[in-house]
Length: 508
Image (tube, rainbow, N blue to C red):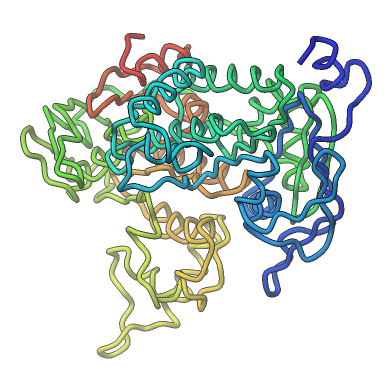
């Protein structure tokens, strides 16, 4: 595409015909109106940011565009022609490619075999030729993958890179990226955005779904905000908007900034958590945690950063005694300033904490505390009263107590477990991705709860995929790479790129 054509595509010299146009799209699931009268236009040679809280209707909209769902009402146009993709294959034939947040790779196959399934000529290519094409594309896009690696052996971050590469290699003219940076180091985000800029300059359209507002302002040419399934804001030049303005559009009210009081960590008394040369096996029998030395002291919040699959899960489980060490030692302090015990927010609450068939209220008695009794049974009215008080104090506003927990959305399940765990006093708090699945306001409240535990003298170990979040709330950040603790960084004056280099196995 010529320079003039790119300029026209980006709106500097008049607008071309839309690559994708969505008009009055609506979708209902039972009583839930997921999307209502949604308009969206993506021009060639532009990046279109799509933002909104969890449950705002972003995923449903994207799945209609990609042919996974059929709209109840509305029309779609590609290059000005009406289309009705009835399947992802139809969408791909129209030049639409999508990278889902829940990745669509076959675990039993290699990276090369997964990519071959997506390429028109892939099944007929010889393995050596296919591997060479993948290697060439990997280098060009800065997305390193091993073509011969089985997907089931890859970390989440490696799987995502393979998925992005797969879509890019199909030659899609419209590329939808659903939260593509959530598990990437800053350097990887820069490389991905270099790819996005390349695609834009070649006249392709890119839809970028992200919860990181700075990314929208940095790379998007246009932004659409969804709230409650409807378009609240559609504007060009999102760099002209502040975080506060975009957040207000997303949630319908102003959310005050997080107030973090930076205080000196108390003198180094006995650690509430101490790991000495801790080594542990992962679920596949491989060495997932490799000789880790780490201390968490009373009154401090230690963040854990790393590309997904770097040992964060095993670190948390070792700290809580849920995974044995094969060598080294783990010590948890018995009490700190009158606080005792440990509470935990698991990495995957649905898998690790939800008991199918039990209600929200029944899950609230699985917290290790003494259960109110009535005769030989449980005093459920007393449990309900205690839960109501806890819900009000914690402020995350759980689903009704009689609802079956497994029937709720991921964000609602997370709020129940956060209320149960963070509503208790403890000397040690281990929180793995505590804000995952939460909207802006509940994310802010969760961060405040962790800081409140810290202020009461607890030691807090917090894993997050959002480096900005860790820099905002943590006193120190422990950086993981390939099972090793490669550095511990004080957040005062912390540099994102230096932390990113550690995440990727380099030096700060």
